[in-house]
Length: 176
Image (cartoon, rainbow, N blue to C red; front, side):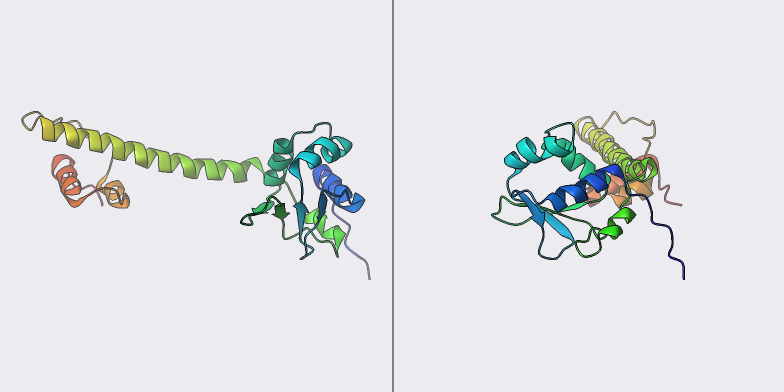
């Protein structure tokens, strides 16, 4: 029976596993064997990071962990930083080869999601401004349609019923 070829491990992950194997006093495996604890961030940054990387910046190390989908596990009233990943294992170190860096496509998908939320907030803000201006000057109402459909209005929980009905009467119901 042949074994499948072993996947190459990303350099950062390889270095992380080596760091954990070297056993510095400020870094150790978590009790579950799928996480690791950084006991003292300052000592870790000053002593451990320069030994394994060309920098001593904890934020750069954290950024790399985020790129590889590690999750920070928070503990209340604790100075210990714990990071976990489903494919990181003390018992089966070869599993770490499955840890892959997020692709640009994965990161841009989240950015697009954030953009759509920003557009909805901007549309809401513009509608709020138009509504406020109409209340102040009831005889002067802009007839130029806002870049907003009734479907968008319904999706925004911040609109009260008066404003929603005003928007629909001013710009029509385009929810179709």
